[in-house]
Image (cartoon, rainbow, N blue to C red):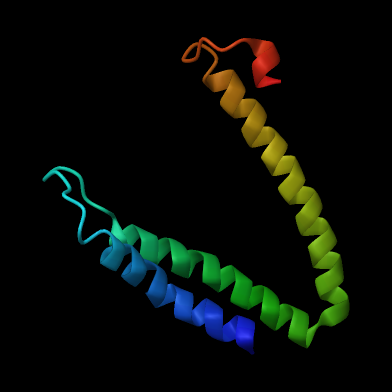
Length: 101
């Protein structure tokens, strides 16, 4: 219950803390902090987590299978995105390939 309370509190507290801490900064007119995007990101992260908690609560055996499949798919996606990022951004960086490796 403590984790649930802190997660729910974070939805409002993270943008609030960011707002309060940056009040004293002298920001230029064209530099704005995207509070709305931060809130949307927090909600978009919380919904899948809540879905996973519900699945784990109702169907614990199936959730272990879903977790294994999700871990494999997630690992493959990370590798694909990393390779695609290196291939697509090959000319934009002057870094040595050994450094990238």
